[in-house]
Length: 159
Image (cartoon, rainbow, N blue to C red; front, side, top):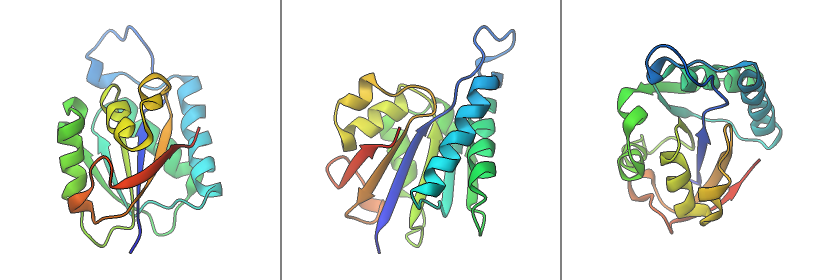
C-alpha cells in the first residue's frame, strides 16, 4: 500500500489579534488560499483519508476551506489536536507515526516553523525558506506510518 503525507501550513491569518494567538482567524486572503489549495489537491488526485489538524482557529478554518473546495467523498476522519499547536517537528512526526496503518493519504495542517522543518526532512532545505502560508508538501512514503521519517520518502512542494 502506498502512503502519501500532505504537510500544509495554515493559510494567511490576521496579525495583531487582540486575543490569544490560538484564536487568530484567517483573513479574506487566507480563506481564498485555503480554497485554492483544496482545488489544487483535488486536481492532482489527492484525497485525504485522515487529517491531523492543530486545534487553533486558523488551522481549523484552513481545513474547512480546503475540504470545502475538495468535497472529498467519503469525508476524511479529522483529528483536531491541541498538541499539534505547539508541537515541534519531532513531536508532530510522532503523531504521524501513530496513524492507523490502513490510512493511505494523511493531511497534516499546522504551523511554522514546525511544518517547514518537518517538510524539509523530505523535500530538502528549500522548505525552510519557501513555506509561505497555505504551502503544501506532498511526500510519497516508502514505509508504513510507524516508520515514516526523513529519508523514507520523496517529497515535493505543490505550490
